[in-house]
Picture 1: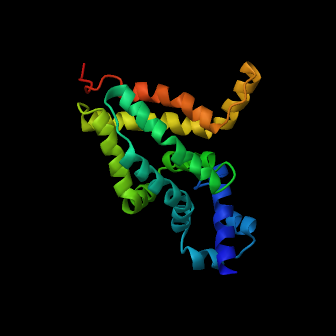
Picture 2: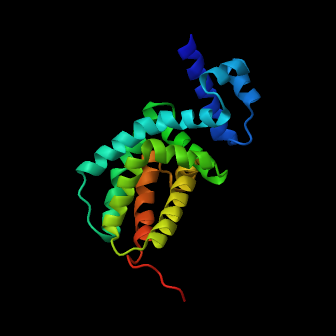
Picture 3: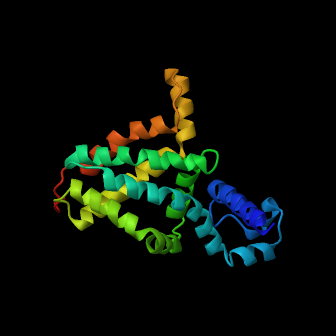
Length: 214
């Protein structure tokens, strides 16, 4: 019963967080959707921050080991071609999230976007504390592809690449509907990612030398 209650709370929180955001979702709404009392949330999670982290943990626990495995067996080149190969390598781990829930990949990206836009600083600490090794391995792979890029320029390009990814994936349903309406072509979330990768890779790589002040 306790396991069932905990899962119900996580499912309710995930739905509300992804649709309304973290700050706009009240604990009362979560208890109503999960059909539990506030004491149950406090017992299982202790706080709203812990609940937010637990929602992410379900996805990161599946995603990060798969990303780590892909990084360990993939040989990358340099420049845009290397970044493109790296990004294509990350598609299967992202799609594996669909096994956790219906539209799990899109839901996860919506949650990421919510955390990013609402400045949930505790999430950064949580991610780096629990999954820092994988994050550092991913950044190292990017540096391998773009060895002449400064730390500052790398920060900006990662920021813009993540923004493109989150926006495109979070709006993937609208994109697929437009593609079907305008081009009479049915596309799924994997095809959206495959269209996105070359664009992001070129923007990410650009010139592999840092921009200088004008």
